[in-house]
Length: 292
Image (cartoon, rainbow, N blue to C red; front, side):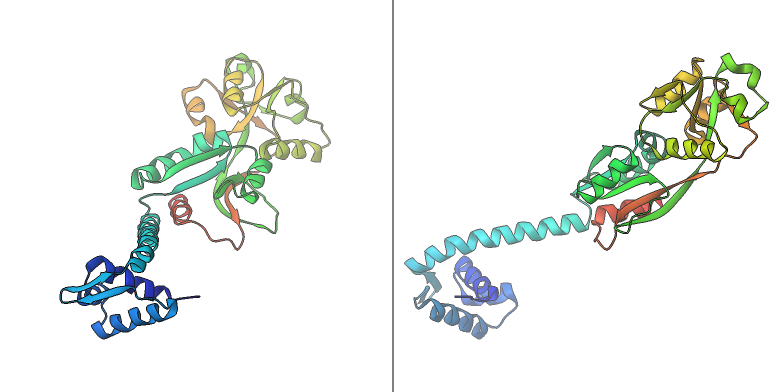
């Protein structure tokens, strides 16, 4: 038996109001249409669902049983409609973003703050990791979008370019004699170099650059966060390779200075990564609009 949902809706309102006239008003139908729908439903079951009386209609014993189920379904449908409206209006829901600690702190934080102020009902979930890890998170459905360094070459992914960053080598007061000088790669490698320990895009890019000039870049110190790269350089433990935009405060106040090289360091680009041909949630779409 496969009755049309509209028949059940007519039944629900007739039972709820006890009146075919009121059911017709609630559903914007004519009373004959309501009567016909109820007749169809009764004929499909082969039982009587309503008693007709001078005041309207009342449920039979069998009608009471059917109503107990239909009422629950109507409540769930109403809740579902309310939930969909809330998701559409960004009154509720969640936004799951993947990215590195440094990109969250130094790049995304202002956008996350603005998004939260505009849509406080949306729960934010931040997943930290390297670019390969963020790609895995996205493909596994654990995040809605990833913010990563480019290039990303993967037919399953779509990457929308966002901003340009410039990486550089920085040092603290202990290496003051290097300030305002231009170093060759040979000269740089005479000093301890500090690099990010994980398989990040920035680490791979600088390693490949040195290889292109015939050098092997072997860091004396490896650390697990950008904050440690900055702090170790400030304390004079070596020369750190960081993103210039992430140390703008330290460069301005003078606790760090940039090491200039005789070869150019290419810029890097940050992109917003999503699954290709997959629909975005409304929250994810709004966040991408905000960032771009």
